[in-house]
Length: 123
Image (cartoon, rainbow, N blue to C red; front, side):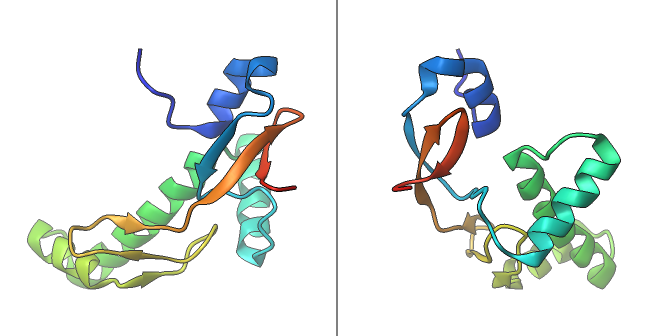
């Protein structure tokens, strides 16, 4: 069995069994950033449903990749070097940094599944 990496899927599949489950997440459904609301509205208009948390991470990834391709072209070593120099990234969820290995370093917060929703803990 593979671990579920998407909180929304885990919550939906677990139904009542996940109620009260604690986890760490960089996704926060109570985010107050204006671009969070804009993304949600555009996603809903396009797909007819609310975005799952992985949609935000996918959007951030494509935004960085597009910026790199636009700046240096399609040569992969140049794209890699460009991305590695991208120290701070303005994200829909929370700004993050990219380390020397190309990994995103994000802040994680304690969350709990309450009434079928992933919410910050304590709440």
